[in-house]
Image 1 (cartoon, helix red, strand yellow):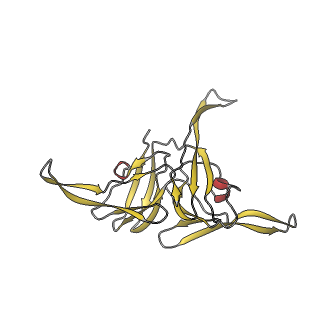
Image 2 (cartoon, helix red, strand yellow):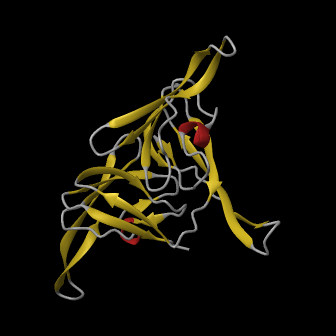
Image 3 (tube, rainbow, N blue to C red):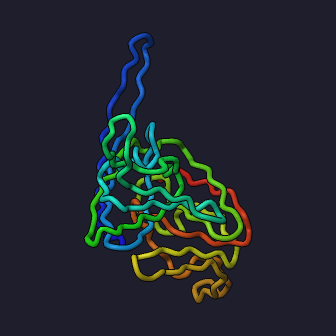
Length: 222
């Protein structure tokens, strides 16, 4: 279960080139993620040079923690475990395999099997691109907002078809929102909208279900 113990801080700084009269601005921040025993869906709403489990979590997690990514048909799993190293002839705690990509609009499961809540901090550079493009395929997609902001489903720039569904998970149950045609007593016409409206927190991933593939262009919300 994921508790909403989320903090976000951004610091702007300038990086000056030594051989050219140019500057570039970066925004760095962090999200504090607390997972109770069991599963919750998270996301890494930043970018960095290393978006693998090792790069995102390092040694913050207890041994036995697993991260799952979903490709539309099956899961890839990385576990934090103690592995014997033939270089040092000692056991080394590491993510294995460390090949999962947790970046961008990818949501992922975190399984906490430690028996007690675990707090971790995910940090990196905030994506400042004008938009981030992602493909949503037919069926179930494990996705997330690539920007570190809290948004309602209707503000995430989806191009939904009637019948599309979004599922958020609180650690024990799902909340489901469906895109449907609803009669409006204000206009006395049918209006296509998400019902009910769902708020997605910073650092929270979710499921998107559709029978109609779409290109999801998430426009920068700040």
